[in-house]
Image (tube, rainbow, N blue to C red):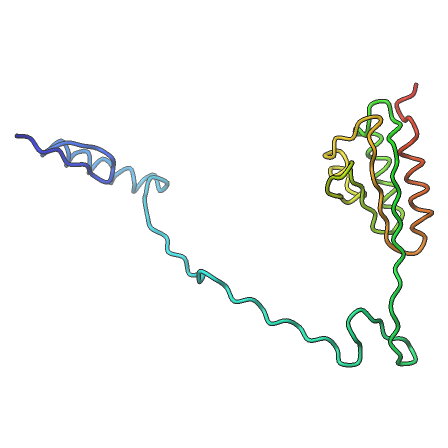
Amino acid sequence: MRILATCAAGTTGTGEAQQLRHAAHDARARTEPWRRTRTVTSLVPERMPLPAPRPHHPSVAPGLAPCADGRNERSTMTVATRTVRIGSAHGLHARPAKLFAQAAKDAGLPVTIAKDAGAPVNAASILGVIALGIEQGDYVTLTADGEGAENVLDDLADLLTTDHDAA
């Protein structure tokens, strides 16, 4: 009856042959560090405690902005939304997307663009705009926050409805 043993190196064998395989594995582990096997224990606890919530300043209620005369006033932020149909013959590929993203960046307001009912992306990000895969005839929704948002969306809508691929 012969008994086979499996070693840590993944070899099976008996007697001297197995000892030779172990020695060869140990020698390789010394000269090739990636062959070493080790157990790493984590020093991070399984669940980190959440930080304590920050208290609001006592003189300013949440959602209110302090005025110069000490009163609290609701801050008004204008949010504008526009739905536009894409006019470029090949959609928003690299060149039209670059023009649009640069215009959104130059606007100085946070502007987002969303295709149909999809998630909005930063309009100033050319990669985000190209990743939407916008083709000719698709509808996109532009949203801008801040003073002058309507004018910014007018300019961006003009860019999107123009056919930049016309010869």
